[in-house]
Image 1 (cartoon, rainbow, N blue to C red):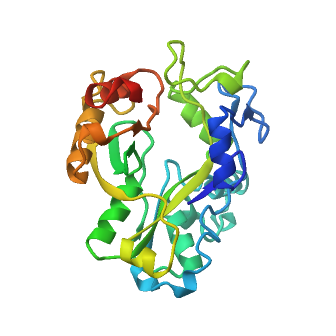
Image 2: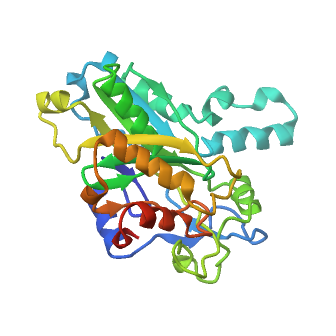
Image 3: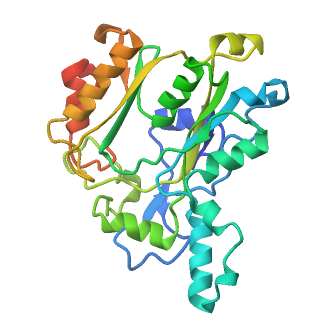
Length: 303
């Protein structure tokens, strides 16, 4: 596992901070946000999350190793730099040579694959609003992220032995924050940013913008044992579907999420009674649909 967060790049430290109920949400100081409704967030200078996590990569068959990294907004810094340069000079030659390449969301897995020399499946998934649901089952755990399901399927189909899968986001540029704030789905608790993220609270008013990265190294059991890799969890199955309801709001009845979870359990061959943990908070953090979906399918103790 690899992580880049407001608490640093150490997975154990990050996990312990979460258990302690700490967060790294502070007022935005990267630019003047005084005229924006949202003036806070969890910020961290973004670096490649997966660099160095595969110290033994030279012993891996790189033709059978791939990278899937998802993002909601892509590499906004290069896009912003080029747009500002173009506005100031009106000279297209002032745009960075790799302007178009870097603001595409698939630039993250592409650059990581180049660094590691991984020639297997390589693409990105984009998911920003809650009209799509992804559920997967690790041993007695329900979780959600699209790249994990896709990476596991590539391994199951024999298209790869090892996949790096995860997500990355760095939206702390003025137009990035403005764009998200314009949706009115973000919290505006500027007077108390550290307690603004409260998805299950009756007084919730939206999500908190953050940046960082996290990846898992997923591989077949045989491949992991062959290279004597530490095995953290077993992926059992997953599913993907769509709410088909609204571009930003989830279904009021939570059916999109509940049906996806049910399909993931079937795919994993796991019964409801075997699940002991569920992990998910609504992107909008405006309503309890996700809590209800877990409560209806699993057990009230999960919520």
